[in-house]
Length: 165
Length: 165
DNA sequence: CGCCATATCTGCGAAATCCGCAAGCTTCGA
DNA sequence: TCGAAGCTTGCGGATTTCGCAGATATGGCG
Image (cartoon, helix red, strand yellow):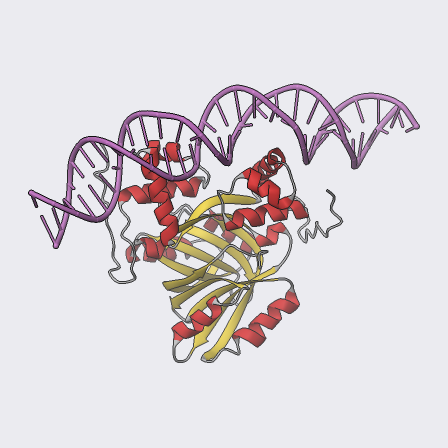
């Protein structure tokens, strides 16, 4: 009675991406609008029973495909300095990325194509802490050729609504 | 109980940053670990009644201080091209940032200090769409002097645990 | 100082939701 | 043809959510 939707669209064979069908996508979209929406309401929206939605959501969480969390703008909340750091690497880029991943001050790490090999977003207590992380810890990583920092002045937008538009 | 805690720390006079006390911070941390955690459990953790937690959470949501949502890695999910775009502006930077905010493909906009005035993260259907957004729409904005793109290859880390470490 | 308005917290029942479980059905692939 | 996987329906019981009434501050203001 419903989903004749496009569905699949894997596009990435390796990477163990657990192929999501259109229904799971729809469930995720529902939870992107409201992470606390009841399973029954989601089921009604995507054409599934409450129990089925519950099972799927649990699996998506277990698999790490999605997480349901509160997000804020640290700057608005009041404390901490934030910055994006562009990094150039010689040698194994991924090992540097992994090292960054291990740092608690680093919230976001992405490998990119362009004049930076890696972009990392870091959140710190204050300017001293920020300076310390960038100069002492990141620049000290083996393979790091150079870095460039962009200190956050103001966050203007932050959404999680891809797929819903 | 009380609050001789630091609290305030606005740093941004306008912007109506609603001063958060230590209790609200603690509530947010709870929801950063699990966006669906029951109010009663949160209350027990932060020392408040269930109803009080409910009220504060509702207010935080209404005020836009936080949002509870499902987050994913679009690349893992399987479709769409992502990129970070660094932008240089001549004239009013904020008006350019506002224009970016209005674009549905733009998920993240932040004004920065450094060799870029603005960083914007964009999520697209495919390469054509990406090219279109960058070259036709962003570069066409009045005041945009230049842009530089960083296409995402792989997301390595993504957390929302500031405050909890 | 006394009073009112606002804000916040607590303590309830009532309603809704979550959760585990079982039985039956369909599909898909070995 | 058999078996695994996934969905549905149905069901209680435990848990959670929700709305409201009654305390308890707190901050003006005359």
